[in-house]
Image (cartoon, rainbow, N blue to C red; front, top):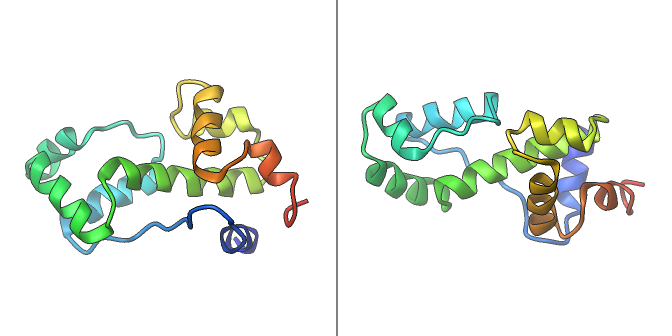
Length: 128
């Protein structure tokens, strides 16, 4: 876990954060995603499960986290990807664990958010 914290502190790109909402409905959603990062459930599907409209959930996500639902889920997946990669998991394994359809889709998301591929990221200072 210390490795993850060091990595997050050293980022030159946009800071990684995963705000925790206070609303009970959002807590159910976010807890599930953290436990199951490959979950593909859409916000309207969550609405049916927890008894709220997708519009309400969208509004709450912005209000309580400062992010959209999809941004929050992507941040959760990115943080989990960093954890798994730091623990020595292969890029392919991490991509599949997080629900990406392909390794290239995962690498594209990683590069878009952190400015490099997973291999480049972990082979450059301060991680080398």
